[in-house]
Image (cartoon, rainbow, N blue to C red):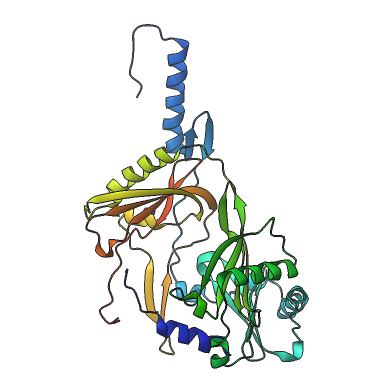
Length: 374
């Protein structure tokens, strides 16, 4: 079955939910302890001005930096001459794809290749070769490293046949583990981290399963270092596969969750300009990517989302800020409110080493598009 056809069918079943980051002078002599305390205070004050953070007895360089705005996003979608000179050639990309796909028991023959094109993601400074074969099979190769990072292939079944391919959660987890081992990945390194299906209301009717395995640090799954696959039951065919392997700093835990909560609450006093009444706070330790959400709201800037209509009439939405921030451990603090529209909480990322707010989620109130209906 055509993956695009299936995706369209699934999307049709999903209702759009508009739910819709001076010392004080003293005359008397001071004790050694007091001198040390004043020196520490001085270090903190100078550090904040110089871009460092003091935590306990260590000094850390600040993690968050002012986000870079992409001034001409549509133009940045095009790969320029300088970028072309730094990436591998089409031939190299095809050769690397052919070789790496053997790991997944996929025989990509050059005669079956119908198209190869470059796609650029300006937010992540990423350029990818997309190789299309047999009309519906797509293979994604990083144009800088030559690494295969994603593929999606035809399952060869009609929609009616696929809908009959149902199974239960336990069997699909076991099948995913078999596939992981078959592909040469070690489950001691990549651990089961996510399981869902196309029918969350009745899994017994599910005919597509989405399963991820991730590296783990301090009991936390890192989705930025993970293996994800879509499997069709009964035929046990993997139709999509993704490999994420982004640099992770595995920063130290130097502040407590209680401290992080207080930091988030203080930041929320600035961000919550609408004066929503606070209802509750949830907190957990996670691995996140630094993002500009809180910075933009705090500085009275737009959330970065823009929409334009392309020459062919396609409506294209995009974010105008770079998103290739560092991946760090942080406390994820969600603050809920009594009266914020749709009951959506604001979530703050508090770096667990430096105590900085390094991003967040749902910081801006989302606008309702009056043209969207259920």
